[in-house]
Image (cartoon, rainbow, N blue to C red):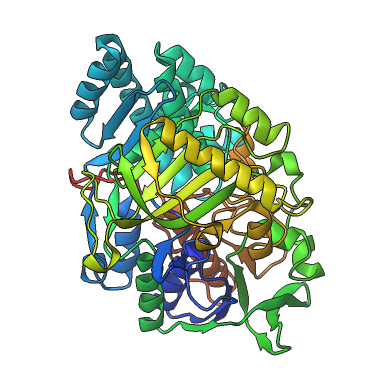
Length: 527
């Protein structure tokens, strides 16, 4: 079986490893010069800066990829457990650090907001753990259920009480309002909705499970996050995958009602038995890969259905005042107003919440720099933005205004950043993300998780065109590095199962192993 994989994002790499390890002939085609997709890096004033996902959780997902290929993750990637989840700064001048050790976080919250808030946090942790453990085996690590009723059927009578408790019928914000008496804690945990590009005012309360995922382990990747893509691509090649960089796919071909190959932008035709598209589904739906691929998926998302995009800034700067940790969040004064500006007014917020990844810091705030760089450290800022990069231009004046507001938000919390000239910063807008990922408008996470059924509307691995499969962050089970990797696993399993079912002599057992329960990784932890 010859499989062509379009795109070397984490989903495509995970699928390539699994398929090649099971004997498939795999060709991975990547338009860029390096693997990773959104897990990318750029150069800022001579130094590499990660400009994609910054947080690694669910280490066991990646351990499994290496284990099934007969190798060990630890032999190829240096991961250090982070004791700190993030440092949070609020508009009233207060600060709160959260830790993977729940007791330590409870103590911090008690000092921050009192004993009542600490008890509320303890109850919240129990609830988020319940949601995560309920959904892990029957949703996150399994094929997409056929709607809510399919999920209930999968849970069975014994699991029905847990399904009723997960909070799918209410929004995350309403659940947090009932949970926490301190509005700052509502804002803090409401931010988890943005991890998959959604608004806490519209996303279901089930997204609180992210709190438990982070407590179960956050990991710092030695050498930068992009190292993960590098070690996965190396593993895929060791298992026999042929990776071709600079090989943009122009169309997905079909013959006799089945995907039959791909044609590159160069005009080269590659005939295969199976095609796996590791790209945003919007690219297929928008016709970027030809008519057959367009008809194989649902119509394009309306702008209101898209996830958030982002305005990102990568820079080197000297920082004074407040101490940064690796992961930091500076909250806006009015969270509801911020999301109204993004999702209703469709513009960049004038008082944005700003995430800052201080890539030269560890989880205690220690700054590790070579003498050649003085005190100038690498920073990566993320600001939520509307996914309208295909219908409007985010001009320099508008972007500069928002970036200035972001630095003002940092300064209001006591963090002074010696901001370099505009030309010395690497800035990306929704328009830039649309150019990198056509058809998306710059949406970074596929469909937004707005409403109780949105998660069931993400496509699964199979499409309407036999032989064409999907994986990646816009596909079930969703966005984020572990979820993208799981989508690659599910796609590979679907390909292998379908291939086995069409053999003249059908084997007695079908490949399986998709219902692995969530587990905490030792008691070393991650964000």
